Length: 462
Image (cartoon, rainbow, N blue to C red; front, side, top):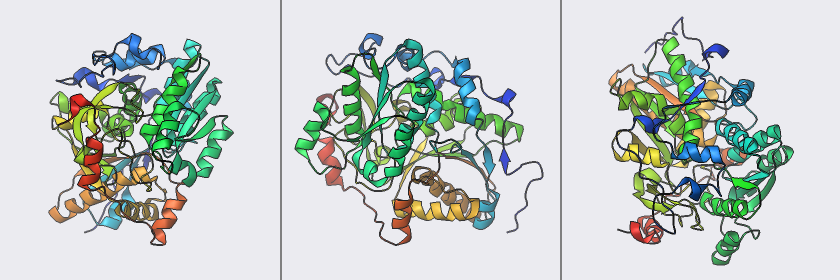
């Protein structure tokens, strides 16, 4: 099948500064049914602003609880910071299309053009800005693969706020240069679980050899924040406020596609906690909710941590130490610890309550893929598109390739959009494992999952 390049669609398309979005879009404002509220673990009543105030800064609490305001104006200082690295390009994958010999048109939104190498900076700068405006003394957070920790370290250096990062131990050991970047920007980085918090010590006492998890790291970061005067905790995924900030991705992508007279039939994103996926799909999901269009939306998660495809839609703690509010989401149980494989940041036990609700109500699909197949796709993509993708991003690439090949078999010229969340330059240990044949696929058994399900909160046990 011969391929022709459209004369009016460049390889890379950038919005102008004037076309950049000036607002964030709140997807909840158009949802027919709202996600269930987070619950105070002590009272099991919906959380209030007073409940969240000791943990998050004030403006972020307002954003977290607001389900009615459709658009939030992006403050001028954040818009100024965005201009350092945004708009990010919408790229037509001509070379990938040719290599696959597919009639499908493949676009991807590339979020790796900043030092963090990922989309995480979009929310990091917003959260640090609001913390600085409130006059806070410092921040704490967790990070899995390190992109969020790096992004937050960048933003904290820019706004001159101290930062403590609890990094999942297996990633801390696999990615020494990622923590070096955080150190360069002035952040303190601690492998989690650690002996610096009560939660960390309890986890280590139970399993001294654990590689850690995002749930463990969240417990430590929250504890550190609430026990340090003038500090607050910030999170890089899952929360409503984070999906709000990340809507800049989808708003830019949709605007660019409109200028190019395109609209995606399929939208594909990797899913760990949901920030990238939620941001990418936001304005397209709005069209779907309002009956304006009906694109297929596919979440791609690792088979080693299959929250959507094998989890339960129940209330669960957001952290392993059980000190955070309960959220109704697709979860594997807050005690679930995924294998220390190379799925990068896609190791969280649960999924964004917004995305969980949309998935539960049938507005989107989900698939789980093994990591060897993910890296096969990553290498294939790199050779043809010249960008070395992060392992997280490669989950979306895997499914985009699979869908493009289905188009080839069916002779359908569909338009595919996927999110390339970042670059894989700090993931060379993983790439080397794949290339030398030592990478393995670990998929939890039903028995493994049942052990974690058995420790769900009492109100959620089936």
